[in-house]
Image 1 (cartoon, rainbow, N blue to C red):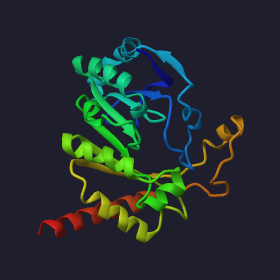
Image 2 (image 1 turned 60 degrees about the vertical axis):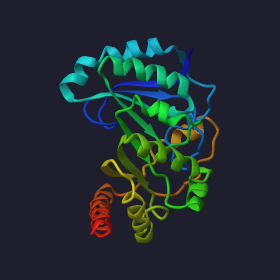
Image 3 (image 1 turned 30 degrees about the horizontal axis):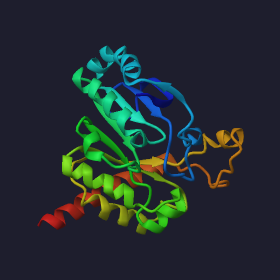
Length: 245
């Protein structure tokens, strides 16, 4: 068995707790308008590795994981599109006591519970708050993402919720209220992060002959995004308190 790997980041600091090796798997089932890795979309790209070959690369950094509370994060593309390969690598990592994280939007091929059996944490990217918004922003409705989220609930997998804030698209007050109402019903959420939209990946579109759909939209202000994040967290807590009272 072999998987297709786009790239490997040896010392990631923003893809889960601690210092992490980040494995970017090839292939994605959606087409986010703001994606900064469009070269990961095609399932046929990347370099082939066996599960053991990838595991051995991860294992080299285990001393750093132990000292920082880190581990390995499988990202993409979307790692859920290579489930058999992913499960085998996850098993090897778990058997060695390595903390495992999935960075995903939830658009895979099913058998999610089998995958989550070997996952410590999911970074779950909520793309939009409605099916219409999903279709406009990523090209598909949110049904498959909801299926994945159901599996996370069933397996009680810990979650960090992430959401990209795009000026004029996902930054409105009504949008944030709808997002808060979605998150309030998701169990096992340890963290909520709003990620500011940026344009650093636009040059990749030119290099592979693709049109960038959000041309002209400026980067999201980071300080404003952080303020919005704090408000969102407070609002989620308010809604949960009201729900439980």
